[in-house]
Image 1 (cartoon, rainbow, N blue to C red):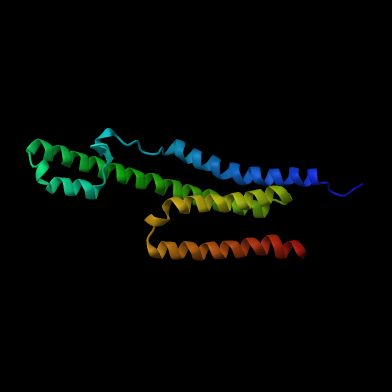
Image 2 (image 1 turned 90 degrees about the horizontal axis):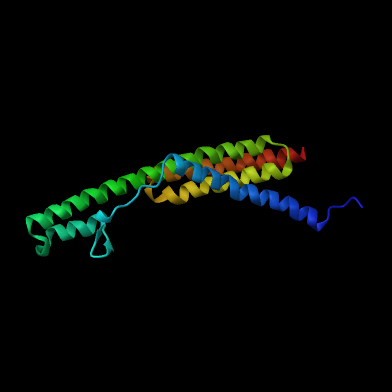
Length: 170
Protein backbone atom coordinates (compact mmCIF):
# COMPACT_ATOMS: atom_id res chain seq x y z
CA UNK A 1 0.00 0.00 0.00
CA UNK A 2 1.62 3.26 -1.12
CA UNK A 3 -0.97 5.73 0.20
CA UNK A 4 -0.31 8.02 3.12
CA UNK A 5 -1.75 6.95 6.41
CA UNK A 6 -3.28 9.14 9.05
CA UNK A 7 -0.19 8.65 11.21
CA UNK A 8 2.09 9.83 8.37
CA UNK A 9 -0.03 12.96 7.92
CA UNK A 10 0.01 13.56 11.67
CA UNK A 11 3.81 13.27 11.75
CA UNK A 12 4.12 15.77 8.91
CA UNK A 13 1.66 18.13 10.58
CA UNK A 14 3.60 17.95 13.86
CA UNK A 15 6.82 19.02 12.10
CA UNK A 16 5.08 22.10 10.69
CA UNK A 17 3.47 22.96 14.05
CA UNK A 18 6.80 22.53 15.85
CA UNK A 19 8.50 24.98 13.47
CA UNK A 20 5.60 27.43 13.74
CA UNK A 21 5.96 27.48 17.53
CA UNK A 22 9.73 27.10 17.93
CA UNK A 23 10.96 29.67 15.41
CA UNK A 24 9.18 32.69 16.96
CA UNK A 25 9.90 31.51 20.51
CA UNK A 26 13.59 31.08 19.80
CA UNK A 27 13.96 34.54 18.30
CA UNK A 28 11.78 36.15 20.99
CA UNK A 29 13.78 34.67 23.86
CA UNK A 30 17.08 35.20 22.07
CA UNK A 31 16.24 38.89 21.65
CA UNK A 32 15.30 39.07 25.33
CA UNK A 33 18.68 37.57 26.27
CA UNK A 34 20.46 40.32 24.36
CA UNK A 35 18.12 43.15 25.41
CA UNK A 36 16.34 42.04 28.64
CA UNK A 37 13.01 43.43 29.77
CA UNK A 38 13.71 46.30 32.18
CA UNK A 39 13.28 45.59 35.86
CA UNK A 40 10.88 47.84 37.73
CA UNK A 41 11.70 48.91 41.25
CA UNK A 42 9.77 49.52 44.43
CA UNK A 43 10.16 53.23 43.69
CA UNK A 44 7.27 53.00 41.23
CA UNK A 45 4.78 51.90 43.91
CA UNK A 46 2.88 54.19 46.27
CA UNK A 47 0.42 52.88 48.86
CA UNK A 48 0.40 49.50 47.13
CA UNK A 49 -0.50 50.89 43.69
CA UNK A 50 1.62 50.99 40.55
CA UNK A 51 2.34 54.60 39.72
CA UNK A 52 1.76 56.18 36.35
CA UNK A 53 3.14 59.52 35.29
CA UNK A 54 -0.37 60.97 35.45
CA UNK A 55 -0.99 59.74 39.00
CA UNK A 56 2.35 61.11 40.16
CA UNK A 57 1.64 64.50 38.61
CA UNK A 58 -1.68 64.53 40.52
CA UNK A 59 0.05 63.60 43.77
CA UNK A 60 2.68 66.32 43.29
CA UNK A 61 -0.08 68.97 43.17
CA UNK A 62 -2.03 67.37 46.06
CA UNK A 63 -1.78 69.28 49.36
CA UNK A 64 -1.34 66.01 51.26
CA UNK A 65 2.15 65.74 49.77
CA UNK A 66 3.05 69.44 50.19
CA UNK A 67 6.03 68.93 52.51
CA UNK A 68 9.42 69.34 50.82
CA UNK A 69 10.49 65.79 51.69
CA UNK A 70 7.27 64.25 50.31
CA UNK A 71 7.45 66.42 47.20
CA UNK A 72 11.08 65.47 46.61
CA UNK A 73 10.17 61.79 47.05
CA UNK A 74 7.33 62.07 44.52
CA UNK A 75 9.53 63.89 42.02
CA UNK A 76 12.15 61.19 42.39
CA UNK A 77 9.50 58.52 41.81
CA UNK A 78 8.28 60.44 38.75
CA UNK A 79 11.78 60.38 37.27
CA UNK A 80 12.04 56.65 38.01
CA UNK A 81 8.68 55.97 36.33
CA UNK A 82 9.67 58.02 33.27
CA UNK A 83 13.00 56.19 33.00
CA UNK A 84 11.28 52.81 33.38
CA UNK A 85 8.70 53.74 30.74
CA UNK A 86 11.50 54.76 28.35
CA UNK A 87 13.36 51.50 29.02
CA UNK A 88 10.20 49.49 28.29
CA UNK A 89 9.71 51.40 25.04
CA UNK A 90 13.31 50.66 23.99
CA UNK A 91 12.85 46.98 24.87
CA UNK A 92 9.73 46.65 22.71
CA UNK A 93 11.37 48.60 19.87
CA UNK A 94 14.34 46.20 19.89
CA UNK A 95 12.00 43.20 20.05
CA UNK A 96 9.89 44.62 17.21
CA UNK A 97 12.80 45.10 14.83
CA UNK A 98 14.31 41.73 15.75
CA UNK A 99 11.00 39.94 15.10
CA UNK A 100 10.48 41.87 11.88
CA UNK A 101 13.94 41.13 10.47
CA UNK A 102 13.96 37.45 11.45
CA UNK A 103 10.34 36.99 10.40
CA UNK A 104 11.09 38.27 6.91
CA UNK A 105 14.28 36.17 6.76
CA UNK A 106 12.36 33.04 7.74
CA UNK A 107 9.64 33.73 5.17
CA UNK A 108 12.29 34.21 2.47
CA UNK A 109 14.05 31.04 3.64
CA UNK A 110 10.74 29.21 3.39
CA UNK A 111 10.40 30.43 -0.19
CA UNK A 112 13.83 29.07 -1.06
CA UNK A 113 13.55 25.69 0.68
CA UNK A 114 12.02 23.01 -1.49
CA UNK A 115 11.12 20.58 1.31
CA UNK A 116 7.35 20.94 1.59
CA UNK A 117 6.95 20.61 5.36
CA UNK A 118 9.92 22.72 6.35
CA UNK A 119 9.09 25.52 3.92
CA UNK A 120 5.56 25.75 5.29
CA UNK A 121 6.82 25.83 8.88
CA UNK A 122 9.32 28.58 8.05
CA UNK A 123 6.77 30.70 6.19
CA UNK A 124 4.08 30.45 8.87
CA UNK A 125 6.62 30.68 11.71
CA UNK A 126 8.06 33.82 10.11
CA UNK A 127 4.58 35.30 9.76
CA UNK A 128 3.83 34.58 13.43
CA UNK A 129 7.14 36.15 14.39
CA UNK A 130 6.23 39.34 12.55
CA UNK A 131 2.77 39.32 14.15
CA UNK A 132 4.37 38.90 17.60
CA UNK A 133 6.60 41.91 17.00
CA UNK A 134 3.69 44.03 15.83
CA UNK A 135 1.37 43.01 18.65
CA UNK A 136 3.90 44.25 21.18
CA UNK A 137 4.78 47.48 19.38
CA UNK A 138 1.72 48.44 17.26
CA UNK A 139 0.34 51.07 19.65
CA UNK A 140 3.75 52.76 19.78
CA UNK A 141 4.05 53.09 15.98
CA UNK A 142 3.04 56.27 14.21
CA UNK A 143 0.11 56.13 11.76
CA UNK A 144 2.29 56.35 8.66
CA UNK A 145 4.42 53.45 9.93
CA UNK A 146 1.30 51.37 10.61
CA UNK A 147 0.06 52.04 7.06
CA UNK A 148 3.44 51.30 5.49
CA UNK A 149 3.73 48.09 7.52
CA UNK A 150 0.33 46.88 6.37
CA UNK A 151 1.20 47.72 2.77
CA UNK A 152 4.45 45.75 3.01
CA UNK A 153 2.55 42.85 4.62
CA UNK A 154 0.10 42.72 1.71
CA UNK A 155 2.98 42.70 -0.80
CA UNK A 156 4.77 40.00 1.20
CA UNK A 157 1.66 37.80 1.26
CA UNK A 158 1.10 38.21 -2.49
CA UNK A 159 4.76 37.45 -3.30
CA UNK A 160 4.75 34.43 -0.98
CA UNK A 161 1.53 33.13 -2.50
CA UNK A 162 2.87 33.62 -6.01
CA UNK A 163 6.13 31.80 -5.37
CA UNK A 164 4.57 28.96 -3.40
CA UNK A 165 1.25 28.46 -5.16
CA UNK A 166 1.46 29.73 -8.74
CA UNK A 167 5.04 28.65 -9.48
CA UNK A 168 4.43 25.23 -7.91
CA UNK A 169 1.69 24.51 -10.47
CA UNK A 170 3.88 25.49 -13.42
